[in-house]
Image (tube, rainbow, N blue to C red; front, side, top):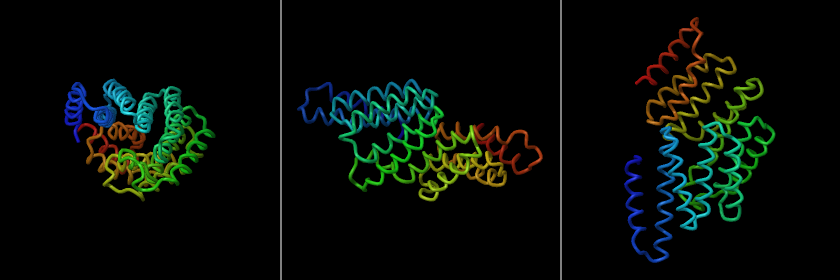
Length: 278
């Protein structure tokens, strides 16, 4: 669904809330507003419209509170934490995650709690706290083991074993950029598990997994594998309109510079450049 359509529905719900409604109906409308605002925030964030995303996240949080949906409020805080992490503000992200965990520990299901642990792990990785990162990642896996299909809201159903493997691989890759010898292979193994569990139908996530795996191969010096996965990543990126995917793909470009002796690397560089300029 496009952001304009979501915003249109959001406006319609706001109009209904301006009218007198029975308490039960009003509560339900606030929850719908929260879900729509959360979707609009994610779309704006994925398009790198940070201020707009922040405004929608705040609206979603207020609406979730008004609708009594504590679990979704925690989910929104998790989204806000992710935004802080992309803006290189891990301490702010960690505070948001801890707020979400404190508020939803008795009401949120295992998928929500597992997701929050991954955001916590992400913050620790960004702060270079590797032991805390491992602990939070292990806690996420332990909690997720208690999840069962259909027991939690639709908006958190995406968080499964594949998602956990993908986000864990991404965080290990963050660490690998500082210490490739210790973390690059671990990151690659985790990302491969995600790719094995979810195919091209995963769209943006599939493309991000391939980009991450290509970077892992560059970090380990495996240029053959790096080029192969870069080619797959470019093809996957071309099938999505995600600005975030293109931004991540752009991070591969520097790895291809200065390797003129390799025709394959040069071709990979050209593929990246052509897609990013299209």
